[in-house]
Length: 393
Image (tube, rainbow, N blue to C red; front, side, top):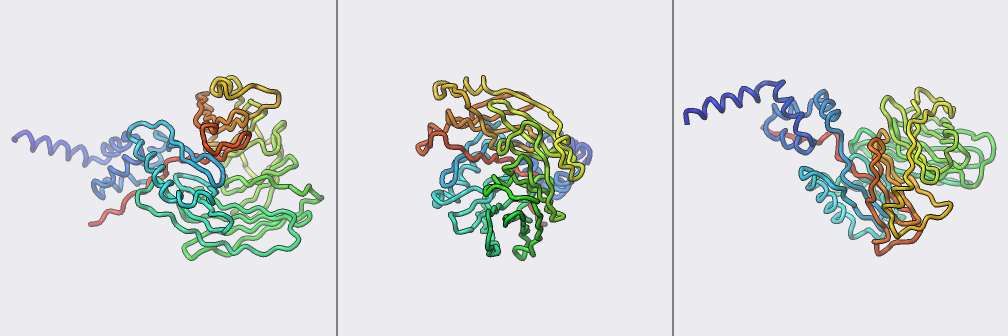
């Protein structure tokens, strides 16, 4: 008994030392363990939630990819990726939350965007959207208010998308309504605040000459406050959300339309990951201004996955001329990429820096498999920064 008092005093001395406490916390390794530690006391919460400490923690322990939602409108499933025991419970929670929230409506549900542990879905053609946080225990799906879309006359084509905020929170959801009338392209940008959708920012630009009936292929999620539209004529049409202005960004030489995706890079740059058959190419654009020249793209990596694809597809695939892979999702800083090989029905996960290639999904094992169809892939990352509890007392 006599030894207990000195031992307790030693523990108190260590944990009462701010520098030592921060060194202990930063070695926890996982954000969910950091949240648990913050429950000990307000003092621990103060250190765990300090922005400077969180920046160090993220540098040492980047947010992990837990799994991904795979499928197509009306039919999705969550596919967990192998995790250490410390994170297995989070993956199980994601599966359970998604099934509980949407199993009754999967026949009419489309996933619109997934970012930082959250996702937005749309129910059928009603225009109703929901926000789900499958990693947060007990948080129900939230209904997103309807957007007051304008009625347009003479529209050649129209494109609308809804996106989660880049800062990782659930506030400031952005709705982009884009349309073309003749040679003019217009957009309205709505941002969701506490009182509902704010007054939209409106912008119009003249393309200068007629374009094909189908000008826009898809709208990519915001990168550094900019939305990018994949077009049919060899360049990306960008929309700066902060200044409500359009700009053009030429594609790198050799990159085809609709064969690439973008991801954010540090210091306001963007990565472009494209495919040419089975060849992956990675480009970096510093985006120091609205320089739309193709010369702004710097090739940083190239990688062929044909051999890995043939090995992982096995007897499901007989190689033919013209076979190719699609880029379906790219991680921040081009850390990883998901590839869809339609000919065999498999989805590949590629960690670009380590050159690891894995088969993570086989659509032929799905009862609703449609040959040569494409899959939508939505990676589910751990929430960052962590959501800390509010301590009372």
